[in-house]
Length: 325
Image (cartoon, rainbow, N blue to C red; front, top):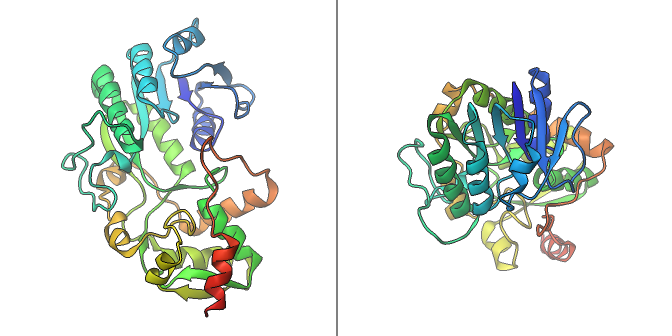
């Protein structure tokens, strides 16, 4: 089939392209052309998704049959895609758990029971929910929306798992939250990518919570895996959540994947039973961590998306916390 990947040269989109090629599709990517070229054999189409003329012009003479959309960041981009691609046989859209009004902190039950944002206010979650509505109205039963949570794996430019791997590999005393028993759920980009291509092929429809199963690991388990994979001699220095917050440590930003207690209790409690029923795989956490570390040691680090700063604990904050313990 002719597969169009909206995105396709960065993180998740890159894995979608690989999955499409492995499944024998004729693949094209539509990007702005600033984040690199797709693999050989892939048709590279360029344009700005916010320009209503760009996608129809790029597709002149080449009609996709299925679409995987990994790059929709604005309401206008969704509206333009709905206008240009309403006739495809299957459209898999990468949304976010942020499309839910109640996440974070959650918990999130079945997809049909949880309210999504229904507002003209702008924001990441609000815009994703708007895109879901616009694309769903255009495509009907040929539209699947994958509400993703934490995505990890090789080529990740957001450097959340990557920061922990680098810091732990450096060894020595490492500040960690005292409550490392907080649960975490994640999905490997390669598992999600392959599943998205298959979902578009099958014409699957409706919303799906596409993250890992509840209870798959904890923050402590993930950090221990990072230490094992890197072969580090790192020593954990547990710091209570209240002490971290008191000195200005920002959850998720300074200590990636860490959430304050009132959020952490429920944010990772997401019903993924439909995803499991529809075949979304969940590879072992250790495999995801090991493959990410292997990539980090051999590849150039990607630049973060425009407007995003890389996470990590500032050295002065880390030094102050370690000096007190």
